[in-house]
Length: 144
Image 1 (tube, rainbow, N blue to C red):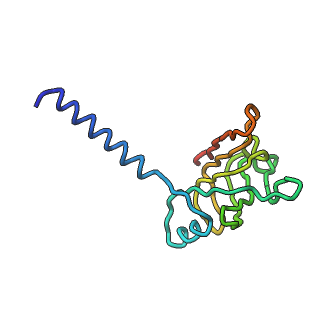
Image 2: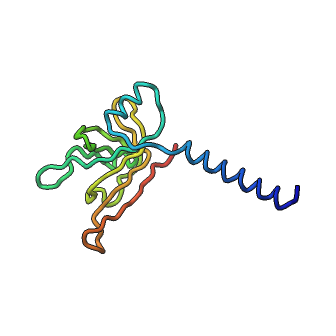
Image 3: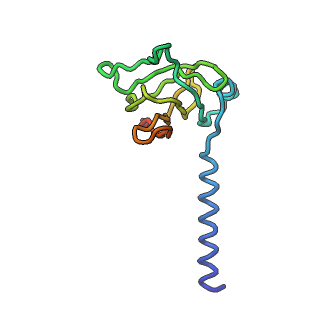
């Protein structure tokens, strides 16, 4: 075989390896009911859940818990998924900036002891620069 053919095969093998490793880390979008079922079956895979924050009629978030003076790495809130199922979400990091302004939230994590343990929070907030456009922000909890 020529050197160029060997080099081509190596490139193809590396590309296949990257695709396989990326596909293994991909998580799926589910609702809280399915997340609970997966946890009961022992599935520890990270999943995405899309929802809206629970707010009162004046627009204030209900059930948000963040006391940085006591524990700056504990943030909890209630999220309502697309099937109107409410679930407590715990994020072991500080509260993301502009969390109060978010229109829609995507949490990435898994169910642990009856609550959703979030590894990442993705927020969709109204853009301050262009009317009608949404701005997306990602926050990741530090791994300990």
